[in-house]
Image: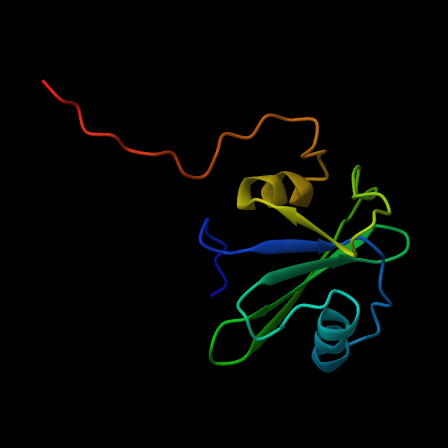
Length: 121
Protein backbone atom coordinates (compact mmCIF):
# COMPACT_ATOMS: atom_id res chain seq x y z
CA UNK A 1 0.00 0.00 0.00
CA UNK A 2 1.23 3.47 -0.87
CA UNK A 3 0.91 6.04 1.89
CA UNK A 4 2.25 9.58 1.67
CA UNK A 5 3.23 11.01 5.04
CA UNK A 6 4.82 14.26 6.26
CA UNK A 7 8.15 12.40 6.26
CA UNK A 8 8.14 12.23 2.46
CA UNK A 9 9.71 14.85 0.25
CA UNK A 10 7.36 15.69 -2.64
CA UNK A 11 8.42 17.27 -5.92
CA UNK A 12 6.18 18.35 -8.78
CA UNK A 13 7.84 18.35 -12.19
CA UNK A 14 7.05 21.79 -13.62
CA UNK A 15 7.04 20.62 -17.26
CA UNK A 16 4.55 18.05 -18.48
CA UNK A 17 5.72 14.60 -19.57
CA UNK A 18 4.71 12.04 -22.16
CA UNK A 19 2.48 9.59 -20.27
CA UNK A 20 3.51 6.72 -22.53
CA UNK A 21 6.71 6.57 -20.44
CA UNK A 22 6.94 3.81 -17.87
CA UNK A 23 8.97 3.46 -14.69
CA UNK A 24 12.39 3.43 -16.37
CA UNK A 25 11.63 6.41 -18.60
CA UNK A 26 10.25 8.50 -15.75
CA UNK A 27 13.14 7.52 -13.45
CA UNK A 28 15.52 8.72 -16.20
CA UNK A 29 13.66 12.06 -16.28
CA UNK A 30 14.13 12.34 -12.51
CA UNK A 31 17.88 11.90 -12.95
CA UNK A 32 18.42 13.96 -16.10
CA UNK A 33 15.84 16.77 -15.97
CA UNK A 34 15.03 17.15 -12.28
CA UNK A 35 18.60 16.24 -11.24
CA UNK A 36 17.25 14.08 -8.39
CA UNK A 37 17.91 10.49 -7.40
CA UNK A 38 14.80 8.39 -8.09
CA UNK A 39 16.00 5.87 -5.45
CA UNK A 40 15.99 8.52 -2.67
CA UNK A 41 12.40 7.93 -1.53
CA UNK A 42 11.23 11.28 -2.91
CA UNK A 43 7.68 11.29 -4.28
CA UNK A 44 7.82 12.60 -7.85
CA UNK A 45 4.57 13.97 -9.30
CA UNK A 46 4.06 14.57 -13.03
CA UNK A 47 1.22 15.72 -15.24
CA UNK A 48 0.40 15.32 -18.92
CA UNK A 49 0.08 18.12 -21.46
CA UNK A 50 -3.71 18.49 -21.02
CA UNK A 51 -3.41 18.29 -17.19
CA UNK A 52 -6.17 15.72 -17.11
CA UNK A 53 -4.01 13.17 -15.33
CA UNK A 54 -1.27 12.81 -12.70
CA UNK A 55 1.47 10.18 -12.40
CA UNK A 56 3.43 9.53 -9.21
CA UNK A 57 6.77 7.73 -9.05
CA UNK A 58 8.13 6.53 -5.70
CA UNK A 59 10.83 4.08 -4.68
CA UNK A 60 9.94 2.42 -1.35
CA UNK A 61 13.16 0.45 -0.79
CA UNK A 62 11.83 -2.74 -2.37
CA UNK A 63 10.82 -1.42 -5.77
CA UNK A 64 9.17 1.39 -7.65
CA UNK A 65 5.54 2.44 -7.42
CA UNK A 66 4.05 4.10 -10.49
CA UNK A 67 0.54 5.36 -9.85
CA UNK A 68 -1.75 7.29 -12.16
CA UNK A 69 -4.90 9.26 -11.47
CA UNK A 70 -7.02 10.30 -14.43
CA UNK A 71 -9.69 12.84 -13.63
CA UNK A 72 -13.14 11.79 -14.79
CA UNK A 73 -14.14 15.41 -15.32
CA UNK A 74 -12.10 18.49 -16.05
CA UNK A 75 -8.43 18.98 -15.44
CA UNK A 76 -6.08 20.31 -12.80
CA UNK A 77 -7.00 23.78 -11.61
CA UNK A 78 -3.38 24.53 -10.70
CA UNK A 79 0.12 23.46 -11.63
CA UNK A 80 3.31 25.44 -11.04
CA UNK A 81 4.24 27.72 -13.90
CA UNK A 82 7.59 27.53 -15.61
CA UNK A 83 10.26 28.60 -13.19
CA UNK A 84 14.02 28.70 -13.06
CA UNK A 85 14.00 25.24 -11.48
CA UNK A 86 12.53 22.13 -13.11
CA UNK A 87 10.74 21.04 -9.92
CA UNK A 88 8.48 22.54 -7.27
CA UNK A 89 8.32 21.30 -3.66
CA UNK A 90 4.93 20.76 -1.98
CA UNK A 91 3.59 19.26 1.25
CA UNK A 92 1.42 16.14 1.54
CA UNK A 93 -1.58 18.33 2.45
CA UNK A 94 -1.11 20.38 -0.70
CA UNK A 95 -0.86 17.18 -2.75
CA UNK A 96 -4.23 16.01 -1.44
CA UNK A 97 -5.75 19.36 -2.48
CA UNK A 98 -4.18 18.90 -5.92
CA UNK A 99 -5.71 15.38 -6.13
CA UNK A 100 -9.11 17.03 -5.62
CA UNK A 101 -8.42 19.40 -8.51
CA UNK A 102 -8.01 22.31 -6.11
CA UNK A 103 -5.45 25.09 -5.99
CA UNK A 104 -3.02 24.46 -3.09
CA UNK A 105 -1.42 27.88 -3.54
CA UNK A 106 -4.74 29.58 -2.77
CA UNK A 107 -5.65 27.60 0.38
CA UNK A 108 -4.00 27.86 3.78
CA UNK A 109 -2.71 24.44 4.78
CA UNK A 110 -1.51 24.14 8.38
CA UNK A 111 2.08 23.00 8.78
CA UNK A 112 2.70 19.26 8.98
CA UNK A 113 4.93 19.70 12.03
CA UNK A 114 4.93 22.11 14.90
CA UNK A 115 7.44 22.32 17.71
CA UNK A 116 6.32 20.90 21.01
CA UNK A 117 7.61 22.89 23.94
CA UNK A 118 7.22 21.62 27.48
CA UNK A 119 5.14 23.72 29.86
CA UNK A 120 7.38 25.04 32.63
CA UNK A 121 5.45 25.70 35.87
